[in-house]
Image (cartoon, rainbow, N blue to C red; front, side, top):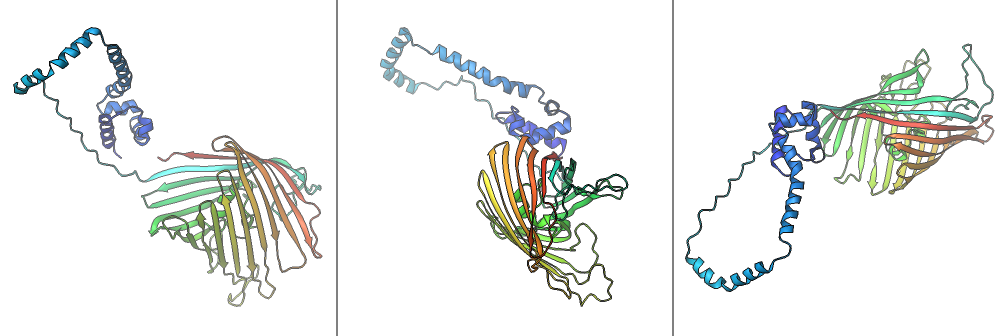
Length: 475
Protein backbone atom coordinates (compact mmCIF):
# COMPACT_ATOMS: atom_id res chain seq x y z
CA UNK A 1 0.00 0.00 0.00
CA UNK A 2 1.38 3.42 -0.99
CA UNK A 3 1.55 6.56 1.15
CA UNK A 4 -1.13 8.18 -1.05
CA UNK A 5 -3.51 5.28 -0.44
CA UNK A 6 -2.93 5.49 3.32
CA UNK A 7 -3.66 9.25 3.31
CA UNK A 8 -6.87 8.65 1.31
CA UNK A 9 -8.05 6.09 3.85
CA UNK A 10 -7.34 8.50 6.73
CA UNK A 11 -9.35 11.29 5.04
CA UNK A 12 -12.24 8.90 4.38
CA UNK A 13 -12.23 7.74 8.00
CA UNK A 14 -12.29 11.36 9.19
CA UNK A 15 -15.50 12.01 7.24
CA UNK A 16 -17.33 9.06 8.80
CA UNK A 17 -18.43 8.94 12.44
CA UNK A 18 -16.78 8.61 14.87
CA UNK A 19 -13.99 10.13 12.78
CA UNK A 20 -10.41 9.50 13.83
CA UNK A 21 -11.28 8.81 17.46
CA UNK A 22 -9.81 5.54 18.82
CA UNK A 23 -8.43 4.47 15.45
CA UNK A 24 -5.98 2.11 17.17
CA UNK A 25 -9.05 0.06 18.17
CA UNK A 26 -11.39 0.53 15.19
CA UNK A 27 -8.75 0.31 12.42
CA UNK A 28 -5.57 -1.16 13.94
CA UNK A 29 -4.25 -2.13 10.49
CA UNK A 30 -4.46 1.42 9.14
CA UNK A 31 -3.15 2.87 12.41
CA UNK A 32 -0.08 0.58 12.42
CA UNK A 33 0.68 1.11 8.73
CA UNK A 34 0.41 4.90 9.06
CA UNK A 35 2.83 4.87 12.00
CA UNK A 36 5.35 2.77 10.04
CA UNK A 37 5.18 5.04 6.99
CA UNK A 38 5.06 8.48 8.67
CA UNK A 39 6.76 7.85 12.02
CA UNK A 40 3.67 8.59 14.14
CA UNK A 41 -0.11 8.75 13.86
CA UNK A 42 -0.10 12.52 14.38
CA UNK A 43 2.33 12.97 11.51
CA UNK A 44 0.15 10.86 9.23
CA UNK A 45 -2.96 12.90 10.14
CA UNK A 46 -1.05 16.11 9.49
CA UNK A 47 0.15 14.79 6.11
CA UNK A 48 -3.49 14.09 5.23
CA UNK A 49 -4.22 17.82 5.70
CA UNK A 50 -6.30 17.31 8.81
CA UNK A 51 -3.85 18.51 11.44
CA UNK A 52 -5.04 18.32 15.03
CA UNK A 53 -8.55 19.56 14.15
CA UNK A 54 -10.04 16.21 13.24
CA UNK A 55 -8.91 14.39 16.36
CA UNK A 56 -9.39 17.24 18.86
CA UNK A 57 -12.82 18.16 17.53
CA UNK A 58 -13.91 14.54 17.77
CA UNK A 59 -12.56 14.21 21.30
CA UNK A 60 -14.32 17.39 22.48
CA UNK A 61 -17.62 16.67 20.80
CA UNK A 62 -19.02 14.16 23.24
CA UNK A 63 -18.41 16.12 26.48
CA UNK A 64 -19.75 19.35 24.88
CA UNK A 65 -22.84 17.50 23.69
CA UNK A 66 -23.36 16.15 27.18
CA UNK A 67 -23.17 19.59 28.78
CA UNK A 68 -25.52 21.00 26.14
CA UNK A 69 -28.08 18.27 26.80
CA UNK A 70 -27.90 18.88 30.54
CA UNK A 71 -28.46 22.66 30.07
CA UNK A 72 -31.45 22.08 27.81
CA UNK A 73 -32.88 19.66 30.32
CA UNK A 74 -32.45 22.19 33.16
CA UNK A 75 -34.24 24.90 31.17
CA UNK A 76 -37.22 22.65 30.48
CA UNK A 77 -37.70 21.43 34.01
CA UNK A 78 -40.89 22.73 35.74
CA UNK A 79 -43.40 24.59 33.54
CA UNK A 80 -44.44 27.98 34.99
CA UNK A 81 -48.10 29.00 35.47
CA UNK A 82 -47.71 31.62 32.76
CA UNK A 83 -46.56 29.05 30.26
CA UNK A 84 -49.48 26.78 31.20
CA UNK A 85 -52.03 29.61 30.77
CA UNK A 86 -50.50 30.53 27.40
CA UNK A 87 -50.69 26.95 26.19
CA UNK A 88 -54.43 26.71 27.09
CA UNK A 89 -55.17 30.02 25.28
CA UNK A 90 -53.40 28.87 22.13
CA UNK A 91 -55.29 25.58 22.23
CA UNK A 92 -58.68 27.33 22.32
CA UNK A 93 -57.67 29.63 19.46
CA UNK A 94 -56.23 26.81 17.35
CA UNK A 95 -59.24 26.33 14.93
CA UNK A 96 -59.32 29.99 13.85
CA UNK A 97 -55.58 30.18 13.60
CA UNK A 98 -55.45 27.05 11.49
CA UNK A 99 -58.06 28.42 9.09
CA UNK A 100 -56.19 31.70 8.68
CA UNK A 101 -52.97 29.88 8.19
CA UNK A 102 -54.46 27.73 5.45
CA UNK A 103 -54.71 30.69 3.08
CA UNK A 104 -51.49 32.39 4.11
CA UNK A 105 -48.50 32.13 1.85
CA UNK A 106 -45.60 30.03 3.03
CA UNK A 107 -42.68 31.72 4.73
CA UNK A 108 -39.82 31.80 2.26
CA UNK A 109 -37.50 33.71 4.53
CA UNK A 110 -36.17 30.51 6.19
CA UNK A 111 -32.61 29.74 5.11
CA UNK A 112 -32.20 26.77 2.73
CA UNK A 113 -30.73 23.52 4.03
CA UNK A 114 -27.01 23.24 3.41
CA UNK A 115 -26.06 20.94 0.54
CA UNK A 116 -24.79 17.48 1.42
CA UNK A 117 -21.03 17.14 1.36
CA UNK A 118 -20.06 14.44 -1.15
CA UNK A 119 -17.90 11.65 0.23
CA UNK A 120 -15.34 10.30 -2.17
CA UNK A 121 -15.41 6.53 -2.54
CA UNK A 122 -12.19 4.86 -1.42
CA UNK A 123 -11.21 1.74 -3.28
CA UNK A 124 -10.17 -1.22 -1.14
CA UNK A 125 -6.49 -2.00 -1.46
CA UNK A 126 -5.16 -5.55 -1.70
CA UNK A 127 -2.97 -7.01 1.07
CA UNK A 128 0.73 -6.21 0.92
CA UNK A 129 3.00 -8.95 -0.42
CA UNK A 130 5.52 -10.26 0.22
CA UNK A 131 5.21 -10.17 4.01
CA UNK A 132 7.08 -12.21 6.57
CA UNK A 133 7.10 -13.30 10.17
CA UNK A 134 10.04 -14.37 12.33
CA UNK A 135 9.23 -16.75 15.19
CA UNK A 136 10.66 -19.55 17.25
CA UNK A 137 10.98 -21.04 20.70
CA UNK A 138 13.48 -22.42 23.19
CA UNK A 139 13.27 -25.53 25.39
CA UNK A 140 15.72 -26.00 28.23
CA UNK A 141 15.97 -27.83 31.55
CA UNK A 142 17.37 -27.56 35.02
CA UNK A 143 17.79 -31.26 35.75
CA UNK A 144 18.97 -33.66 38.45
CA UNK A 145 19.21 -37.42 37.98
CA UNK A 146 17.84 -39.02 41.14
CA UNK A 147 18.17 -42.67 40.04
CA UNK A 148 20.58 -44.17 37.53
CA UNK A 149 23.99 -45.74 37.13
CA UNK A 150 26.04 -44.74 40.22
CA UNK A 151 29.41 -45.44 38.56
CA UNK A 152 30.98 -42.32 37.01
CA UNK A 153 33.49 -42.86 34.21
CA UNK A 154 35.61 -40.05 32.80
CA UNK A 155 37.54 -39.66 29.58
CA UNK A 156 41.06 -38.23 29.24
CA UNK A 157 39.66 -34.68 29.28
CA UNK A 158 37.82 -35.25 32.54
CA UNK A 159 34.34 -35.36 30.97
CA UNK A 160 31.80 -37.65 32.70
CA UNK A 161 30.68 -40.30 30.21
CA UNK A 162 27.36 -40.87 31.95
CA UNK A 163 24.09 -40.27 30.13
CA UNK A 164 22.44 -36.96 31.02
CA UNK A 165 18.94 -37.46 29.57
CA UNK A 166 16.54 -40.38 29.37
CA UNK A 167 16.32 -41.94 25.92
CA UNK A 168 15.30 -45.54 26.72
CA UNK A 169 18.51 -46.93 25.22
CA UNK A 170 21.12 -46.24 27.90
CA UNK A 171 20.82 -45.77 31.65
CA UNK A 172 21.36 -42.21 32.86
CA UNK A 173 24.15 -41.36 35.30
CA UNK A 174 22.98 -40.87 38.88
CA UNK A 175 23.59 -37.45 40.44
CA UNK A 176 24.35 -35.83 37.10
CA UNK A 177 22.82 -32.36 37.05
CA UNK A 178 23.03 -29.09 35.21
CA UNK A 179 21.42 -26.85 32.62
CA UNK A 180 20.48 -28.43 29.30
CA UNK A 181 19.37 -26.63 26.17
CA UNK A 182 17.37 -29.33 24.45
CA UNK A 183 15.87 -27.51 21.48
CA UNK A 184 15.81 -24.10 19.82
CA UNK A 185 13.77 -23.17 16.75
CA UNK A 186 14.36 -20.15 14.55
CA UNK A 187 11.73 -19.83 11.83
CA UNK A 188 10.93 -17.46 8.97
CA UNK A 189 7.52 -17.65 7.28
CA UNK A 190 7.11 -15.59 4.13
CA UNK A 191 3.82 -15.05 2.27
CA UNK A 192 4.69 -14.33 -1.35
CA UNK A 193 1.06 -14.07 -2.50
CA UNK A 194 -2.34 -15.02 -1.12
CA UNK A 195 -1.75 -18.61 -2.21
CA UNK A 196 2.05 -19.06 -2.23
CA UNK A 197 4.21 -19.12 0.91
CA UNK A 198 7.57 -20.40 2.11
CA UNK A 199 9.02 -21.56 5.43
CA UNK A 200 12.63 -21.79 6.58
CA UNK A 201 13.36 -23.29 10.01
CA UNK A 202 16.66 -23.88 11.78
CA UNK A 203 16.97 -26.18 14.79
CA UNK A 204 19.51 -26.42 17.59
CA UNK A 205 19.42 -29.91 19.14
CA UNK A 206 21.17 -30.63 22.44
CA UNK A 207 22.21 -34.06 21.14
CA UNK A 208 23.46 -32.94 17.72
CA UNK A 209 26.96 -31.65 18.41
CA UNK A 210 29.63 -30.30 16.13
CA UNK A 211 33.06 -31.90 15.75
CA UNK A 212 34.24 -29.55 18.49
CA UNK A 213 31.51 -30.72 20.87
CA UNK A 214 29.38 -27.56 20.60
CA UNK A 215 25.66 -27.37 19.93
CA UNK A 216 24.97 -27.98 16.26
CA UNK A 217 22.55 -26.17 13.96
CA UNK A 218 20.81 -27.79 11.00
CA UNK A 219 17.93 -27.13 8.60
CA UNK A 220 14.70 -28.62 9.94
CA UNK A 221 12.27 -27.22 7.35
CA UNK A 222 12.73 -25.47 4.03
CA UNK A 223 9.69 -25.74 1.80
CA UNK A 224 7.38 -24.08 -0.68
CA UNK A 225 3.63 -24.13 0.02
CA UNK A 226 0.99 -23.65 -2.68
CA UNK A 227 -2.43 -23.23 -1.10
CA UNK A 228 -5.54 -24.50 -2.89
CA UNK A 229 -3.45 -26.35 -5.48
CA UNK A 230 -6.49 -28.64 -5.65
CA UNK A 231 -9.90 -27.89 -4.13
CA UNK A 232 -9.37 -27.68 -0.32
CA UNK A 233 -5.85 -29.11 -0.76
CA UNK A 234 -2.31 -27.70 -0.52
CA UNK A 235 0.88 -28.79 -2.26
CA UNK A 236 4.28 -28.69 -0.53
CA UNK A 237 7.83 -29.23 -1.77
CA UNK A 238 11.13 -29.34 0.11
CA UNK A 239 12.20 -30.35 3.62
CA UNK A 240 8.79 -31.13 5.10
CA UNK A 241 7.34 -32.15 8.45
CA UNK A 242 6.29 -35.78 8.16
CA UNK A 243 2.67 -36.62 9.07
CA UNK A 244 3.66 -39.40 11.49
CA UNK A 245 3.86 -37.21 14.61
CA UNK A 246 2.16 -33.99 13.55
CA UNK A 247 -1.40 -34.66 14.73
CA UNK A 248 -0.63 -36.57 17.94
CA UNK A 249 2.15 -34.16 18.96
CA UNK A 250 -0.15 -31.15 18.61
CA UNK A 251 -2.79 -32.89 20.71
CA UNK A 252 -0.31 -34.03 23.38
CA UNK A 253 0.73 -30.39 23.66
CA UNK A 254 3.93 -30.99 25.65
CA UNK A 255 6.67 -31.54 23.11
CA UNK A 256 8.59 -29.23 25.43
CA UNK A 257 8.63 -32.07 27.99
CA UNK A 258 8.97 -35.14 25.77
CA UNK A 259 8.47 -36.44 22.23
CA UNK A 260 5.50 -38.64 21.35
CA UNK A 261 6.07 -42.38 21.60
CA UNK A 262 6.94 -43.00 17.93
CA UNK A 263 9.30 -40.03 17.84
CA UNK A 264 10.89 -40.98 21.19
CA UNK A 265 11.89 -44.38 19.83
CA UNK A 266 13.05 -42.98 16.47
CA UNK A 267 10.75 -44.95 14.20
CA UNK A 268 10.71 -42.15 11.64
CA UNK A 269 12.36 -38.80 11.21
CA UNK A 270 10.21 -35.79 12.06
CA UNK A 271 11.09 -34.16 8.72
CA UNK A 272 12.09 -35.47 5.32
CA UNK A 273 12.88 -34.23 1.82
CA UNK A 274 9.90 -34.82 -0.44
CA UNK A 275 6.58 -33.64 -1.84
CA UNK A 276 3.23 -33.62 -0.09
CA UNK A 277 -0.45 -33.12 -0.82
CA UNK A 278 -2.63 -32.40 2.20
CA UNK A 279 -6.10 -30.99 2.71
CA UNK A 280 -9.70 -31.73 3.60
CA UNK A 281 -12.30 -33.80 1.79
CA UNK A 282 -15.22 -31.67 3.05
CA UNK A 283 -15.89 -27.96 3.52
CA UNK A 284 -16.40 -28.41 7.27
CA UNK A 285 -12.85 -29.81 7.73
CA UNK A 286 -14.06 -33.00 9.39
CA UNK A 287 -12.23 -35.52 7.18
CA UNK A 288 -8.69 -34.77 6.05
CA UNK A 289 -5.81 -36.43 4.25
CA UNK A 290 -2.03 -36.12 4.04
CA UNK A 291 -0.02 -37.99 1.40
CA UNK A 292 3.74 -37.55 1.27
CA UNK A 293 6.52 -39.19 -0.73
CA UNK A 294 10.00 -38.59 0.71
CA UNK A 295 13.58 -39.75 0.42
CA UNK A 296 13.40 -41.44 3.82
CA UNK A 297 16.75 -39.97 4.88
CA UNK A 298 15.44 -37.28 7.23
CA UNK A 299 17.57 -34.15 7.14
CA UNK A 300 20.30 -35.93 5.15
CA UNK A 301 20.61 -35.99 1.33
CA UNK A 302 19.19 -38.95 -0.57
CA UNK A 303 21.56 -41.94 -0.59
CA UNK A 304 19.71 -44.44 -2.78
CA UNK A 305 16.88 -44.69 -5.29
CA UNK A 306 14.23 -45.93 -2.86
CA UNK A 307 11.52 -43.82 -1.27
CA UNK A 308 9.23 -43.65 1.76
CA UNK A 309 5.48 -43.15 1.44
CA UNK A 310 3.55 -41.54 4.33
CA UNK A 311 -0.24 -41.42 4.53
CA UNK A 312 -2.63 -40.25 7.27
CA UNK A 313 -6.36 -39.54 7.50
CA UNK A 314 -7.13 -37.06 10.31
CA UNK A 315 -10.76 -37.01 11.46
CA UNK A 316 -12.23 -34.18 13.56
CA UNK A 317 -15.72 -34.01 14.97
CA UNK A 318 -16.33 -31.61 17.82
CA UNK A 319 -13.80 -32.48 20.51
CA UNK A 320 -13.06 -35.91 19.02
CA UNK A 321 -9.79 -36.57 17.14
CA UNK A 322 -9.00 -39.75 15.24
CA UNK A 323 -6.04 -40.35 12.91
CA UNK A 324 -5.04 -43.65 11.29
CA UNK A 325 -1.56 -43.59 9.77
CA UNK A 326 0.47 -45.83 7.45
CA UNK A 327 3.96 -45.64 5.98
CA UNK A 328 6.20 -47.86 3.89
CA UNK A 329 9.91 -47.56 3.23
CA UNK A 330 11.67 -49.66 0.62
CA UNK A 331 15.13 -50.76 1.74
CA UNK A 332 16.84 -53.15 -0.70
CA UNK A 333 20.38 -52.86 0.62
CA UNK A 334 22.00 -54.09 3.81
CA UNK A 335 23.61 -51.43 5.93
CA UNK A 336 27.35 -51.87 6.35
CA UNK A 337 27.67 -54.37 3.50
CA UNK A 338 28.85 -53.59 -0.01
CA UNK A 339 26.65 -55.14 -2.71
CA UNK A 340 26.56 -55.30 -6.50
CA UNK A 341 22.83 -55.92 -6.79
CA UNK A 342 20.01 -54.46 -4.70
CA UNK A 343 17.26 -56.76 -5.94
CA UNK A 344 17.88 -59.78 -3.71
CA UNK A 345 17.78 -58.09 -0.29
CA UNK A 346 14.51 -57.11 1.38
CA UNK A 347 14.91 -54.85 4.41
CA UNK A 348 11.65 -52.95 3.86
CA UNK A 349 9.92 -51.28 6.80
CA UNK A 350 6.22 -50.59 7.33
CA UNK A 351 4.40 -48.85 10.19
CA UNK A 352 0.75 -48.76 11.24
CA UNK A 353 -0.38 -46.27 13.88
CA UNK A 354 -3.69 -45.15 15.32
CA UNK A 355 -4.18 -42.00 17.39
CA UNK A 356 -7.41 -41.12 19.19
CA UNK A 357 -8.22 -38.27 21.53
CA UNK A 358 -11.01 -36.25 23.03
CA UNK A 359 -10.69 -32.66 24.18
CA UNK A 360 -13.11 -30.59 26.24
CA UNK A 361 -12.78 -27.02 27.44
CA UNK A 362 -10.62 -27.88 30.47
CA UNK A 363 -9.18 -31.35 29.89
CA UNK A 364 -8.06 -33.77 27.18
CA UNK A 365 -7.40 -37.51 26.99
CA UNK A 366 -5.40 -39.18 24.20
CA UNK A 367 -4.01 -42.58 23.23
CA UNK A 368 -1.69 -43.99 20.56
CA UNK A 369 -0.98 -47.53 19.43
CA UNK A 370 1.54 -48.53 16.76
CA UNK A 371 3.02 -51.61 15.17
CA UNK A 372 6.14 -51.77 13.03
CA UNK A 373 7.44 -54.56 10.78
CA UNK A 374 11.16 -54.57 9.97
CA UNK A 375 12.01 -57.08 7.24
CA UNK A 376 15.46 -58.58 7.74
CA UNK A 377 16.89 -60.44 4.75
CA UNK A 378 17.56 -64.06 5.73
CA UNK A 379 16.32 -63.52 9.32
CA UNK A 380 12.93 -63.46 11.08
CA UNK A 381 11.17 -60.13 10.92
CA UNK A 382 11.21 -57.76 13.87
CA UNK A 383 7.87 -56.38 15.09
CA UNK A 384 8.21 -53.48 17.55
CA UNK A 385 5.01 -52.43 19.32
CA UNK A 386 4.19 -49.36 21.39
CA UNK A 387 1.27 -47.88 23.34
CA UNK A 388 0.87 -44.45 24.87
CA UNK A 389 -1.83 -43.00 27.12
CA UNK A 390 -1.79 -39.38 28.24
CA UNK A 391 -4.00 -36.74 29.83
CA UNK A 392 -3.78 -33.00 30.43
CA UNK A 393 -6.00 -30.52 32.21
CA UNK A 394 -6.27 -26.82 33.01
CA UNK A 395 -6.81 -25.94 36.66
CA UNK A 396 -6.44 -22.17 36.29
CA UNK A 397 -5.74 -19.83 33.33
CA UNK A 398 -2.08 -19.86 34.41
CA UNK A 399 -1.77 -23.43 35.73
CA UNK A 400 -2.20 -26.80 34.04
CA UNK A 401 -1.08 -30.38 34.60
CA UNK A 402 -0.31 -33.51 32.58
CA UNK A 403 0.56 -37.19 32.93
CA UNK A 404 1.59 -39.92 30.50
CA UNK A 405 2.45 -43.63 30.40
CA UNK A 406 4.18 -45.40 27.47
CA UNK A 407 4.91 -49.10 26.93
CA UNK A 408 7.54 -50.14 24.38
CA UNK A 409 8.18 -53.68 23.12
CA UNK A 410 11.30 -53.80 20.91
CA UNK A 411 10.24 -57.04 19.24
CA UNK A 412 6.95 -58.74 19.98
CA UNK A 413 8.11 -61.93 18.21
CA UNK A 414 11.11 -62.36 20.53
CA UNK A 415 10.53 -64.38 23.69
CA UNK A 416 13.64 -62.97 25.35
CA UNK A 417 13.44 -59.21 25.40
CA UNK A 418 13.43 -56.16 27.68
CA UNK A 419 10.31 -54.00 27.50
CA UNK A 420 10.33 -50.41 28.73
CA UNK A 421 7.78 -48.30 30.54
CA UNK A 422 8.07 -44.51 30.41
CA UNK A 423 6.33 -42.42 33.09
CA UNK A 424 5.89 -38.63 32.84
CA UNK A 425 4.03 -36.18 35.08
CA UNK A 426 4.25 -32.46 35.77
CA UNK A 427 2.68 -29.03 36.17
CA UNK A 428 2.67 -26.17 33.70
CA UNK A 429 2.82 -22.65 35.14
CA UNK A 430 2.54 -19.70 32.76
CA UNK A 431 3.61 -16.54 34.65
CA UNK A 432 3.30 -14.41 31.50
CA UNK A 433 2.08 -15.08 27.99
CA UNK A 434 4.36 -17.40 25.97
CA UNK A 435 6.56 -18.30 28.96
CA UNK A 436 6.07 -21.73 30.56
CA UNK A 437 7.80 -22.99 33.70
CA UNK A 438 7.20 -26.75 33.91
CA UNK A 439 8.35 -28.76 36.94
CA UNK A 440 8.16 -32.43 35.94
CA UNK A 441 9.55 -35.90 36.55
CA UNK A 442 10.41 -38.57 33.99
CA UNK A 443 11.17 -42.21 34.77
CA UNK A 444 11.83 -45.46 32.92
CA UNK A 445 11.28 -48.97 34.25
CA UNK A 446 12.71 -52.01 32.47
CA UNK A 447 10.62 -55.21 32.29
CA UNK A 448 12.45 -58.48 31.60
CA UNK A 449 10.81 -61.10 29.37
CA UNK A 450 12.26 -64.59 29.17
CA UNK A 451 16.01 -64.96 29.61
CA UNK A 452 16.93 -61.42 28.61
CA UNK A 453 19.12 -59.26 30.84
CA UNK A 454 17.82 -55.85 31.89
CA UNK A 455 19.94 -52.83 32.80
CA UNK A 456 21.04 -52.89 36.41
CA UNK A 457 19.33 -49.59 37.25
CA UNK A 458 16.10 -47.82 36.38
CA UNK A 459 15.98 -44.11 35.52
CA UNK A 460 14.42 -41.20 37.42
CA UNK A 461 15.04 -37.57 36.51
CA UNK A 462 13.62 -34.42 38.13
CA UNK A 463 13.47 -31.32 35.94
CA UNK A 464 12.27 -27.77 35.73
CA UNK A 465 11.63 -27.18 32.04
CA UNK A 466 11.62 -23.67 30.61
CA UNK A 467 9.69 -23.22 27.38
CA UNK A 468 9.43 -19.73 25.94
CA UNK A 469 8.36 -18.39 22.57
CA UNK A 470 9.48 -15.38 20.60
CA UNK A 471 8.07 -13.77 17.49
CA UNK A 472 8.11 -10.61 15.42
CA UNK A 473 4.85 -9.22 13.98
CA UNK A 474 4.32 -9.43 10.25
CA UNK A 475 5.99 -6.64 8.30
